[in-house]
Amino acid sequence: MRDFSDEELERYSRHIILQDVGIEGQEKIANSKVLVIGAGGLGSPVALYLAAAGVGEIGIVDGDVVDLSNLQRQVIHTTADVSVPKVLSAKAKMEAINPNVKVTVYQKFLDASNILDIVKGYDFVIDGTDNFSSKFLINDACVLANVPYSHGGILRFGGQTMTIKPNESACYACVFDSPPPANAIPTCSSAGILGAVAGMLGTIQAAEALKYIVGVGEPLYNRLLTFDAKSMNFRNVSFKKNPKCRVCGGEGIKEIRDYEAVVCEAKL
Amino acid sequence: MKLTINGDVKEIKDGIVLSELLIIEDVEQPDMVSVQLNDEFLTKDIYETTTLKDGDEINFLYFMGGGA
Image (cartoon, rainbow over all chains, first blue to last red):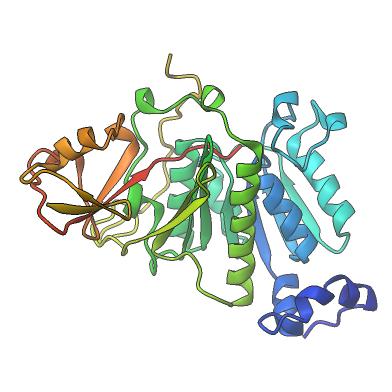
């Protein structure tokens, strides 16, 4: 049992009056640890909302510095943050919103050598990365470490997300198997993204994390939510865990290895 | 025959295989899509030998790799 201060009771009052959350749910949020991988278009709204919600410990991972071209969508960073490491810029905003939250920064990119040790320490992971080698690596690590996570992907006006409870629900590789060939991938910078679409998808991921922590509702298990902001059509596509999945089925994977890194500008 | 493609019922000529449907449906980059036929995901090596039948439900799930 945790005793919230008067300040916290007031701060979280709109959560606490929710029947499905209450004091008990807010305590679960305060006692939870969430890792946000990527402090960019998806990571920005996720980190802001999780900090505001009072998640006890938030880890944030990114090896990059803020660039002027990030600011169109990466709303945790400001013009004054250009050239500042993204994790430090993000941490400052999260602590400004909610000083009760402990923020741990990992100013690095994740790879097979470090991801398992980091992921293991958290209750839930958010994939806010921008490339397939990282997305498949996160899936492998979360399946191996048995840590639930939210997959998120965005492109132009569209987004997709699913929530994965390893060994119980379908994983990312059950649906997409393995990274597409490098020459087929639209270039990250040339494909473009409507900034608000990153916010739409990131806030869905944040809501999924909070639902999981509180234990309310139906997570996006065994279904992929996709939307197209041009038509504003949202769709759920359902599936089952694939017993022959390369990662979580039958034999499954036994160890972490890096996927071939696909350079953003690989396709000319 | 009637096929349900990404949730929409469409009239498609009889007897085609999945690789033909990809062309009809303007899937320009088959490498960037995962194909689900009646709840099962198909491996790319059987696209040309999988004949579709009336009532089949097909979903094209596109890879989306962005996030930053």
